[in-house]
Length: 91
Image 1 (cartoon, rainbow, N blue to C red):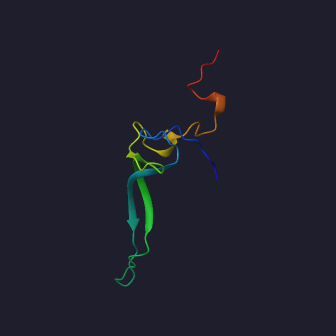
Image 2: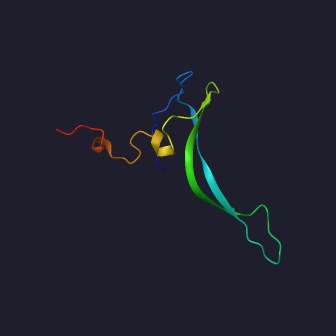
Image 3: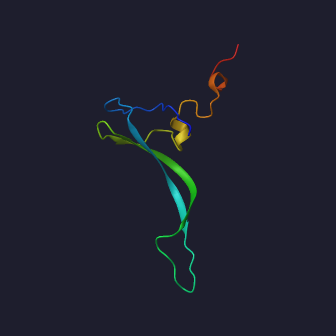
């Protein structure tokens, strides 16, 4: 498990106890045998994530963070680069 700090906080109450949801499209494949398929069994395959939705667990406020298309977009240093982040100025 890799724990990441988020750069987000609730714009309403400034809380940082959040539910973050990656939203997008996926395909579910069902296999039929002898003309019968099980509606409860399917293979889910993601096709693309197109937005993040956030929900504050402290005050209930919900919003869509601007410019965030996937969970790494709201994480601080998601790749563990530390001081090698491209935004750091090198002498």
